[in-house]
Length: 113
Length: 114
Image (cartoon, rainbow over all chains, first blue to last red; front, side):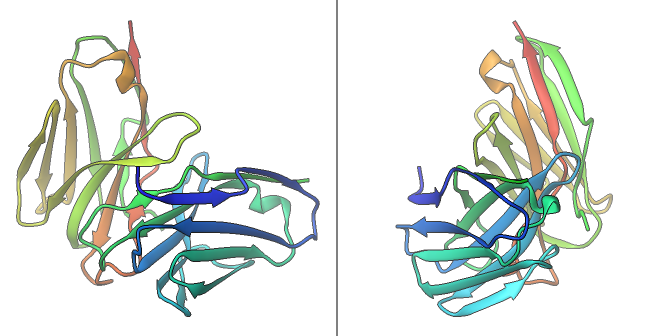
């Protein structure tokens, strides 16, 4: 398995609280992605990073921010969690700009109550 | 917006039978990939087919790509109980250059009956 770890694996939080999810990789891949997976929607891209401190928005970025201060870590922050952000979040990495397979973490199940 | 759409949404077959899933997409692509997701787990890459390829094999998997119809199919031959999972197609849009990630369909949930 590719060296990619997500933490926490499960989290329950209250509406309005900030939440940070962490993705850590040991593969030294340049590109990192955050997706959310919801029933009926498949996986949707939230944010992605193409290098340290280089990030951009994906399809469903509202309410989320990201940071990448080191190659190995990509953080996803929900500034003020809402019930609509209850989802399973996946981090993915790729070594090059597209054209290759993506490696996924095991996911973080987030419940906002 | 979803780029790929899998069909059918769910498929149940007997062990030993072949399973075929289809994927349609909207824009020109660099490549198309298929992933498997077991319940409660992350996605695992199965196979990648480039836009200039028409067919690719990997073990019991056969993937076809028809860029004129913007469609792909995944065939799993001689299915096994362990093939029970959700299968997703993912595209790497030509316009985006690939850096902005893969676009996934909603998946086909495959159940192999013993």
